[in-house]
Length: 291
Image 1 (tube, rainbow, N blue to C red):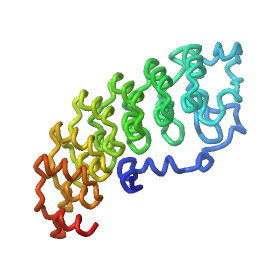
Image 2 (image 1 turned 60 degrees about the vertical axis):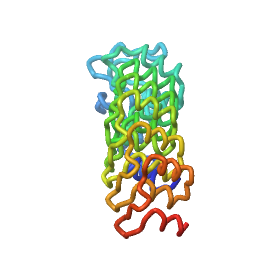
Image 3 (image 1 turned 60 degrees about the horizontal axis):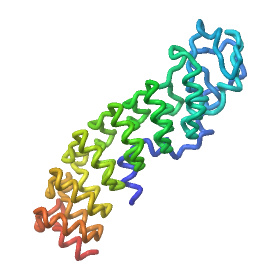
Image 4 (image 1 turned 180 degrees about the horizontal axis):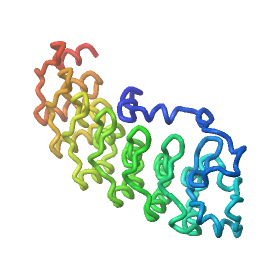
């Protein structure tokens, strides 16, 4: 799998994932008294708990009831905040404790840190199915994309997290979303080639013929990666074996260039045009000979 494919699907998210946490700071808690209690932030600007000032009195956490002007800074200023941290670490018991002990109107379960990441984003990216289930049950938005537009479902599909995909789809995750490059959920699924995930998406009506901003289809990606069974399932579900990218490449060009014989056979069996020429005038045979 090439980094270019990952970059196209994840887009600007690649920068988010590679950026060191310490590189993003929004200020200090030195002046903790008088800060806006509706957005309690740590040194990284992260928080998962949003407490309304007038409701601060009576806040209970681990049998502590701080007055309105004295929040438990150690509790709420850890990197990522308590709900973000529990979701990221897969600590479902801690997550359940936090969500159940605090009144619903005192917690914003969809609060974002400075990278625009919600607790659900962290749980999905780390494959913590139980945390995903707990967050969704308590009102997490399955369609709330972060800074670069990637939704939790796209993150789960791209990482091959079958359980997370199931939970998100069961909670109404949108299968028609696109990222900044026009990649759909089906494009994302084609990277890893999980038949099980594709089956779940097809049950929800995903269109395997959708094109990205470059004219590419999920079938192009699947055969580039050599996913024979996945490509076969796409073809059975209506994928066009002769769809062209803007450069004129058909899936057969992609499969032959990659040397994926199984994919070539499957495409030919389904009627792929062996004489199709790309913008450079090359047929799939040219790429096969070159390889």
